[in-house]
Length: 522
Image 1 (cartoon, rainbow, N blue to C red):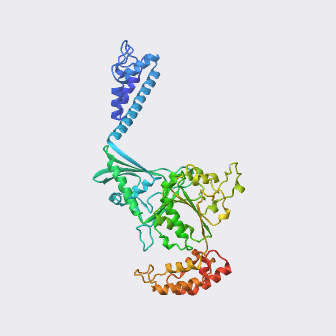
Image 2 (cartoon, one colour):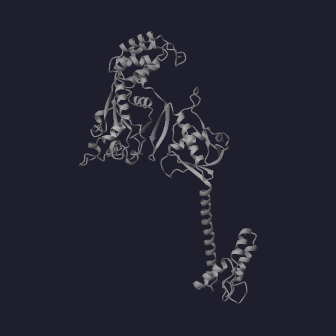
C-alpha cells in the first residue's frame, strides 16, 4: 500500500507559509525517503526488508510501527509520526528549561524579598534614595514605602503639611549598580483574589548578580537595613497585624518623652521602675522557671492618657509597639498567635469594647475556658493563649487598655496574665498645674514653639499655673478635656485662666464627656 505522507511533507517543506527552520527540521528529522515497502522508492512509510531507515525520526517511527503492527496503515503511521515529533519538541523544551535553571544556579546569585516581611521595607527605602529610581523611565509614585503602610510624613513639605512622595521602580526588570557591581531586579505584583475583600497587594522583588559570590547581595541587605534603622533612631515604630497573619509596619512617629505625660504623682515612676526591672531580669526568670512575660492593665475613663502613656513608655525604653485590634473582622486565633520580637510592647487597646461576656455568648467548658467570640473570629480561649499560652512569645510587655475594668472576665485579668493594674483617673489640681506649665514657654533660652506666642518669665508662668489649677476641681475633667481647652488659648495663657470658669459651667451643665462641643460655645 502506498502512502502520500512523504509527498505531503515534501510539499509542506516547499510551502511559503511554513518557516524555513520548521521545513528544514521536517526534512532532516523526518527523512521518510529511506522508508519503502519495496513497491515504490521514497513513497512508503514502511521500511524495506532488513532496513528501518537510516537517520532521524523516520527510523524511530518505522521501528515503532513495525512493533505495533501498523506499518501498513498510513493514518496510524502518520499519527504516530506526529506523536513522536511532539514528544521530541516537548522533551527539548523540558531539557532547555532544565539547562537554563542549571546555568542560572551556576552563574547567577539571587535574593528574594517578600512584601510581608520587614526586609522589603528596607529594600524599598534604599531604592527610593538610589540614583536608579531617579533615572528610570518606568516608576511607581507612592506616599508609602510598603503596600498598605500609612505615610510617616517624613521629609515632606512641612509648611504645606504634605507627605513625602517616593519614586520607586515599577513592576518589571531594572538594572542598577551597587559597590561597582551590576545588578538587576525584578519586581512582581500579585493579582488580588477574584471576589475577595480589598487588601494590600502582595509584592515580591528578586535581585540578581552574576557569579556565585553572594557577598554583594548580603552587603546590599545590610546597607539597606542600616540606613532604614538609622531613620528610625529617634522614632517609635508602630506595627499592626495584617490579614495574612504578619506584622506590617504602619507608621513611625517622633519619640514622645515620658516627661510630657502628666499623671498622678508616683504613677509614672512606679510603672517605669517595674518595666525596667523586668527587662533587666531575664536570667532571674530563667533560673526560676518563670515565663519571661509581664502584663499591664491600664484602666480608667476615656481621655485620661492610657494610650499616650504607652506610646511615651515605648519611647523612653526605645521599644517598638505592636498593636492588635480585636475589632478586626479578619483576625482569627491562628493570626492572633503571630510571633512578636522580644523586647517590644504588645498593645491591645479598648479590650472591653471587643469583649463579649462568656456567660452571654458561649458555653463554658469544664476547664473554665470558653469558645465565646469577642465580636470577631477570635475566641476567648484563643485570646488567653495569645497572652500567656504555651506558644506565647516571651520577653515582651503586654499592655491592655480598657474604659471598664468591671466588664472584663476575671480569667483575663488574673495574676500571671495581668501583673500590674494602674488606674488612670480624672485630673487633679496637680495634673492641671503641670499641664499648664508644659503648655506655655518660659524664658529658658529656647524660642517659642508657636510663632507669635508670648514668652513668660518662669515665675509668672508658675503663678498663672497656680491660678489655673485652683479653679480646676479634682476628678471632674479628664486630661484630654483640659488639653483641648488649652489648645484653644495656646497663645494666650491669661485668657485660658480667665475662661476656665466658663468651661466648668458648661461641663457641669451639659455633663458632656467630650470638650469639643463646649469649646464651640466659648
